[in-house]
Image 1 (spheres, rainbow, N blue to C red):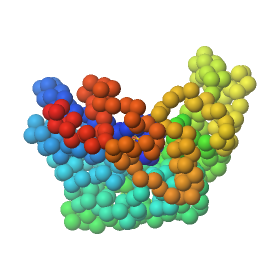
Image 2: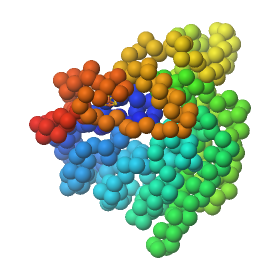
Image 3: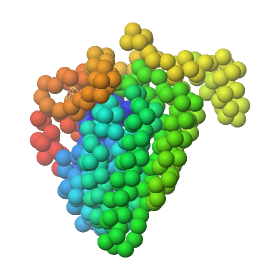
Length: 349
Ligand code: SF4
């Protein structure tokens, strides 16, 4: 539905932001209403759509039960929460990402713990007492204090849930989902190594053990091995293809496949890369300039956040504009382009 946030692979690689045409989207929803009463809004930034209020109102008027895949905490609106409550969706997923404000700035997420607790409180006050929290372990520059702050944050969210639950006589559940951080191509952290596998395992174990001691908390976590496999598939060069092919033939044993093909996974995943290195994905033109990614990387190392894509006329910050324009948008999509968005949306309805 929408893309363009400065945080993750999708955030960088889908620049500039684009939105689904309201009229096109609602026409499809109306067409399908006879066959289902459920509709899922899938996007990296549902509430950034300039006409999300109208869309929600019209979907509710069609008597749809609305759900969303996961919500960016900084974009949860009262309207969306009301729509989710009305849809009897009793569990929502949000992404605080980590436990400390400092580390959140490294990944360009500018919410504070206080704001996160307040937003979760708004969810609980509407009777939705179970919330899933996506969190990452092994982020660049992560310290012991950052890990310990996860306990404090989850404890505060749990307390807020119990406070809201008391008023209606029931308690919910906080479900932190821990994932190892995997550096992704064409993002500012593409030059960084993934946290060492044993160290990542140790940190995930430490956090999951600490969180599981908190009442009303049910921890889920990804193994450090899976994170390392993802890192190999994300950042490996063309030689890794031989290992994937061998694994496909040997029943999925990737370790054996790497031994047989002589692939050293550490070369692809576990070393910081220099700015001079020609990266395997440099042949893919995402539109983002090297200078922009480098500058964002340097800011991340200093825990400095950046402003999101401003979508203003003549911006050349990241290098993507003005190479793409409305005429290039696939059917049903409008790119939010400098000052043209309102006229374009109006014309598209
Ligand atoms: S050039 Fe500016 S407006 Fe265009 S996508 Fe990049 S940051 Fe956004």
